[in-house]
Image: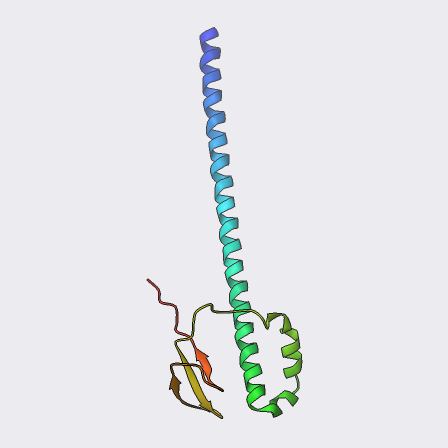
Length: 127
């Protein structure tokens, strides 16, 4: 009888260990899913912020070039709504050239910044 109880006890211990192992695997998978979702949400948020900054900069540039655009309904509201993004830096890289524009046409590029030029950045190279 004692042998039966010892064997039964060992089997129960093995089952408990297996059950705990399966729970750990499930919890690890849940954690990994949560981390993946958090990374995806952060990437979406970051891309959204980036688009807003680009659009804000473009809108400010357009209003500076054609002041009459500032009177178009919604432009002042759009700039005010994104005022907290005015100091966001999208790129920490140095410009590769400076664009010379005259009204709506690109006239050329120069290697150094001059009055009225716009910095141009190169796309980050991927390896």
